[in-house]
Length: 124
Image (cartoon, rainbow, N blue to C red; front, side):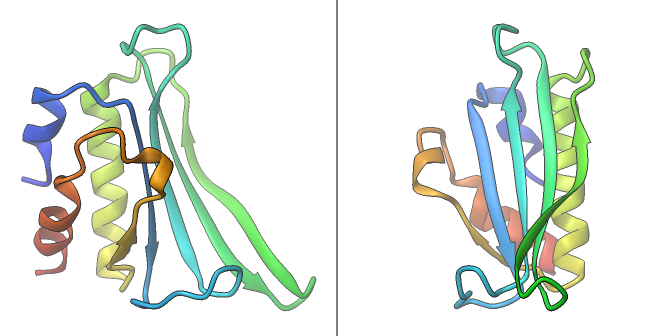
């Protein structure tokens, strides 16, 4: 199970992970996916939002672009449902080679032991 125990035992504040195909990504050059899971404001951590964003170099405009691929702001999205979406997208991306995860420093206020075990589980 991909971190399901973590979601049921702990209160999720914010989760942000950036996934790359390379261990040494180049900022503003390396293709990546950013996954975001957060509680909706004023929901007292009862309703969650999930977003997947794709970042890549765009030759047409000669710059790095970001495109939201998935966003779920359902008024009834629970923590467990949002966490399941987060892990399903993460597994799919790992199968496509996006196995190197980076967690922005500002999102480290939550437990983050799930990172290593999930990557091992989805890349096996």
